[in-house]
Amino acid sequence: MNTVGLVAFALVGATKAIREEFDVFGVAVVGLVTAFAGGATRDLLVNRVPLALRSVGEISLGMLGVGLAVVVSIVLDSPDDHPVTLFSDAVGLAAFTTAGAIVATDAGVSGFGVVAIATINAVGGGAFADILLDRSPFILFDDFYASCAVLGGSTYWIAVTVGATGSTAAAVCAAVTVGTRMAAVTYGWTLPTAQMLGLARRETGNR
Amino acid sequence: MNTVGLVAFALVGATKAIREEFDVFGVAVVGLVTAFAGGATRDLLVNRVPLALRSVGEISLGMLGVGLAVVVSIVLDSPDDHPVTLFSDAVGLAAFTTAGAIVATDAGVSGFGVVAIATINAVGGGAFADILLDRSPFILFDDFYASCAVLGGSTYWIAVTVGATGSTAAAVCAAVTVGTRMAAVTYGWTLPTAQMLGLARRETGNR
Amino acid sequence: MNTVGLVAFALVGATKAIREEFDVFGVAVVGLVTAFAGGATRDLLVNRVPLALRSVGEISLGMLGVGLAVVVSIVLDSPDDHPVTLFSDAVGLAAFTTAGAIVATDAGVSGFGVVAIATINAVGGGAFADILLDRSPFILFDDFYASCAVLGGSTYWIAVTVGATGSTAAAVCAAVTVGTRMAAVTYGWTLPTAQMLGLARRETGNR
Image (cartoon, rainbow over all chains, first blue to last red; front, side):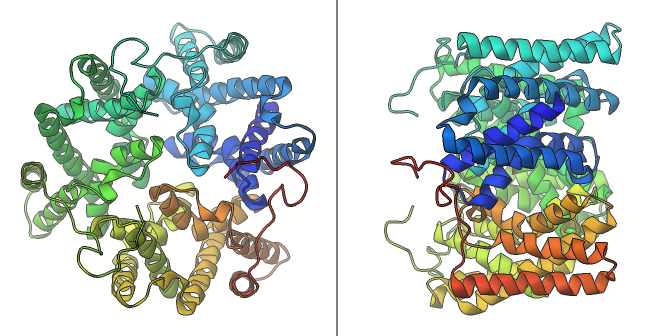
């Protein structure tokens, strides 16, 4: 799952950078940031040297995703919207959420810390890539994406708290994350804004 | 003071995100980032696991601030400009500056390091929130805000250097920060640009 | 070399902030971020308290660069494009790449980790400064700049791997970085985009 995720995340990031006409270095950086910055932030938060800087295999997978993005962008207009990519990306979201929840639990942080680190592991790379592309992270105003990681991470924490083994908690976390994400893609889920909820006035001419 | 600060900072950040019509996840993230990213950066710089990930109480206060922002945005157009918010925010600025100065001094960094970490603790969360909102951090070109943290942090360092006890230094630091901030709000202080000082040519059509 | 680099990087960053009409605090922050954020990120990645927060001498050099930017911006329109600045900046790029490669090798990361940390040390400060200025880091789509750090870092890693001493590897790394950078400036090198390589379709109206 982690393998699929790294390749899919790097492909999605590299595709966005190709669309912005970044040069080949920029495309590689944005692809690798999308794949690895979430995990690197997780490692920094629990005081570890980032795994991506120690393991050669991980980076090779990221590079494969970047290369794949360049290759498929010849034949496809939006390789990041292709069903295969969307599904691989959901698998990656689940793998990264689970990995973050496991590392956070081992580090002994609070329940909020587990959910926060799981979510950062899963979506931090994409958010950082959006900042490099000079836009707000899409997870903050669009789609139902980071919420799947929040739900998955919460599930992991609840499972561990009620006494489940680590592997059971990981399986349930991954299932909830990928399940809610595929449902969100299929049914076009989005989260409401405060304006939609009637909780804030809509300003004219805004956004 | 820390309690007031966390709630005020989360409210200010969440209000900005509501105004940008971020979804409820985005509003919560920007609110919590405003309240906690400065402290988390401080902890990373001195190699600690961020307190916000370990303590449940802190996060609850941040969530309270986010909820408060949603509630008051029904009745107020700009809850972040309300006098109560401005004063609470100044109290938070002072509390976070002091906390940063204490942690930095304990970590044994240089005098510049103490001032830098105190300032990052106080204004780093708001600066990061501005980046998430796809704008330059307002502290870099507007208002007299981060300067209060610089003055407070410098005061702490000077007080400790001349032999004051930690609690005296903390009290003086907090007083200087909140005092200069309220004066800045009251009298509309801003810092000059190089152009205003006649030190650089103004380019036409810029900004 | 490190001294020249710190002053040059701070000058380049401060000049960009002056041009955006940031206030004097903002100019100082962007200048110091350009000079020190790359090294600070390097230190965080290998779990050290950033050197810039411990050493007083380093910060003084950064401040000197900021002051120099303010002074020369009175007489020059673009002090960051002056040949002296371009050469000093190339020297700094080489010094920071080499420092990053040495620290990374000592930390025992992978070959990719050495190149990544050397590159982040060299260009991370400038990239972060661009984010503070609300733009995409120029290294991702323009010029031939970060690539010099990638080539220098790779050279260091190859040299160490084939058995060269640390000081030989450092000398070769610095020579490759500064040499390729001055060649890039002289001959106007840029990296191609995927579109230029015919690997992706150019979208109309983009960028």
